[in-house]
Image (cartoon, rainbow, N blue to C red; front, side, top):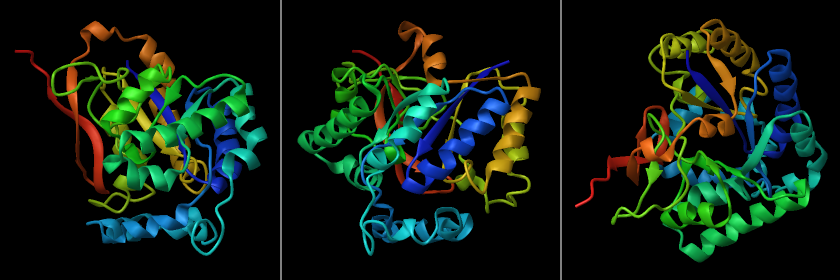
Length: 304
């Protein structure tokens, strides 16, 4: 059957200190591999309230029980409470993930700042944010990162270019149906081959079309039942690592029963030949169940 890369986005301090160790233990019990992508700077989750004007924001909040999953304290960081420095406080937790044999990489420096700002940011702002995350990763792990997955699936052309310049080899910053090489308007390669998240996330599904916590795993398993193409599934330490862990455990067992291999992003990348992957101009678009726009591939680039 197919390979399913498990991409763990870690957005908050609480997700790091509580969700990450729980996911490591679960993945080890279930003999599954995964890539953990860390937010390495301040937790400013409370500043996400500025998204309230986006279409669909309050519908998503109501559907997904944001307070229940994140907690009131986390939702005040960066506003009523100072944002804790995740990488500094949880250095031992992050290193323990690597020491347990999992792939580790960069999610961002400041999750809310990147997610809300990068799409319209200039190259200098983008480089500053990426360099802060890279430098913290080197401080923590003693080596440069090779894996990157942008916060909130938000990117700009400078970010794609910087991934190549900074040595990232395995990147998953976008949503889409399969791998692509990002190119500019003239067809020149912008950055490394992209491994988009191909499957919907739990928070995009729960509360829509009769899908509930009790049956959301069956919906996802139906999507992968006869899948022969490799997939990327993004989970969150704050969801699957905490209250939705029983759902994730059912998914792991279901995917294994379907015959799929549960792997890292790096393993997925190693199986691909750039020459056979389409070149596409990065674009932005909407996804069912998610407010705002996210990075995704546009049309296939055709020279001439």
